[in-house]
Length: 284
Ligand code: GUN
Image (cartoon, rainbow, N blue to C red; front, top):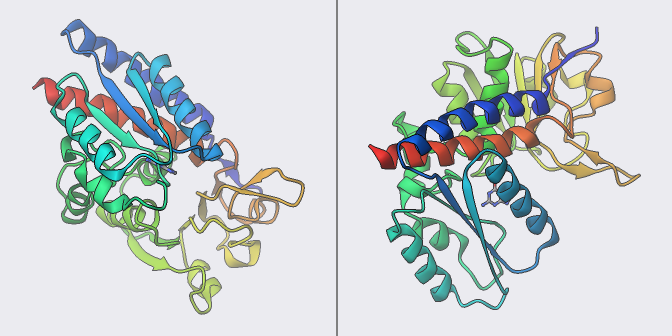
């Protein structure tokens, strides 16, 4: 069997089109959605990410401002800047790109963002809201994965077993919460979980979010399962690849997300959704 692809580029384009329509509606009510992006330091990966976030926003009609600071910025100055953005009614979303320089406490910085502007969904208030089933911003990567599942008709996951490999605060844990909220049975694993394959072979849905190549191979997948690959790695030839051995797993899975062109574009699209919804909420 050859798995069907879940095309993240095409689905993200659909999401951006929806966002653009809603942005137009907001603008006709005199509200210009605005995302403030803060980058501290010179991390090359982060520079690409923030540039893309700003470009995506502008293409969708959202205002995005990028503030760049040197890695030597004192933490108090960053906190003071966040306080100003929190109080500015023309700013609807605040995103502080991670990682931050070593002298900063990322948790403290994230908690300084007003929860109603936390479009990354990283604040403890956002995580808590997700945990208890209240409205709040959902972290963009797992939120995008849920949209990908919905796009293949998997919205109510009652009776489905989902296995999440990886338990980061920004992907694995919120992913598990969102799957639970959709009524799935959920197992959260570590990449070092004993006999991981025995668990993944039971799964109707596998989400691989470890950050290591070949975490999931064909022998670990139930025929017909849905495989979502959150990984972003480089292979020996320097080519972008995920956590999943795509060449092998595509012969077993029913659906699979590619890397690139899978979860990545959806993560970017869901940030636009969160920013738009922050602006919609501020209007009312
Ligand atoms: N660094 C890597 N991914 C992300 C993300 O989604 N948001 C932020 N703020 N930083 C990141």
